[in-house]
Length: 255
Image 1 (cartoon, one colour):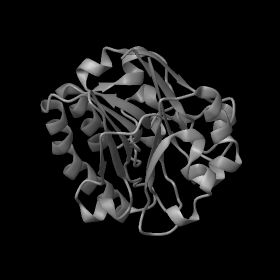
Image 2 (image 1 turned 45 degrees about the horizontal axis):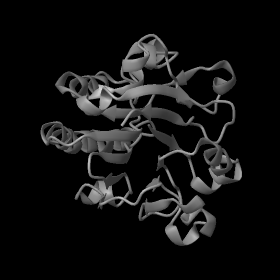
Image 3 (image 1 turned 60 degrees about the vertical axis):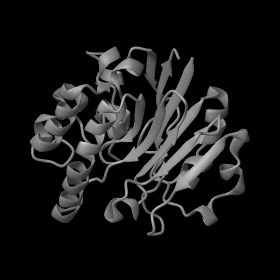
Image 4 (image 1 turned 120 degrees about the vertical axis):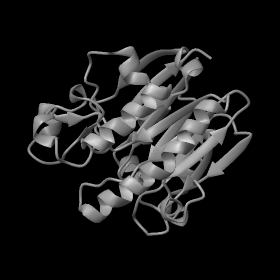
């Protein structure tokens, strides 16, 4: 059984101070995928680089205090892929992949388009560039677990106030279709596949007591190639402790 946890930490040092890594110790995950480091490697506390004997790799953004992804793993990968060979994407630290003998795991952080039209266009450029790469993964014969903050809620069940967000970034028709097209082509949305009727919110606005009232969005996913999806046995969202504006997404696989 493999346990894989994905979380957007909204600043790894902030999440560390809120007890994230103490909690992770209790979980004993095989792999942890982290998004939104907001930290350069030289500014990381040493205990986060060498945490608990895990092998770690960090792909921070060039801009300080912004974006960035990381993966912690009990077992050292056979190969590491840093970035997507796209300057705009890679300068912001949005993609990291660990390859093992029988599968690959990805920590992915799609841009948010909520702060302006220029950001939304950047998000669309990412989506346009990444989509054929995703289809290539499906046809490669290799198994993938793509963890991360996709910054898109796919269906009405995936956010509380869907009617009020039909024209907002994260729930735009073309964003929703993009996720839908991936699923039509063969990718499996792990949470929704296991729990068709459970909303599964993973992110809450800091405004208006959204967290307390559970007015959330499900924008964090573990997207799976079909064969590895068949091994998914359990999924949960951990809300008992708030480490960031996102909650950890925990999945267990029988392989």
